[in-house]
Image (cartoon, rainbow, N blue to C red):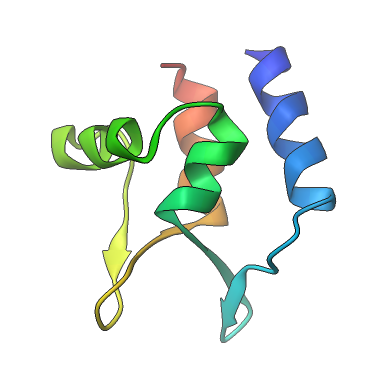
Length: 77
C-alpha cells in the first residue's frame, strides 16, 4: 500500500502534464492515472466500470479527482 502511495506522490510531483484544475479540484485523465498506478488505461477503465474508482465525464474525456485516487489507494486494489 505504501509503495503505491509513494509511487503516486512521486509521479504527481514530477508529472509532465499538469492536472486539469477546476474550482480548486485537481482532475487527472485516464492515461495519467494509469501511468501513476503502473497499469494500463484499460485497467483503469475497468476499475471505473466496476465502481472501484470514481470518475466523472466532463465533456468527452473522463476525469478522476485527486480525492478519488487517494481513496482508491487507501482501500487497496
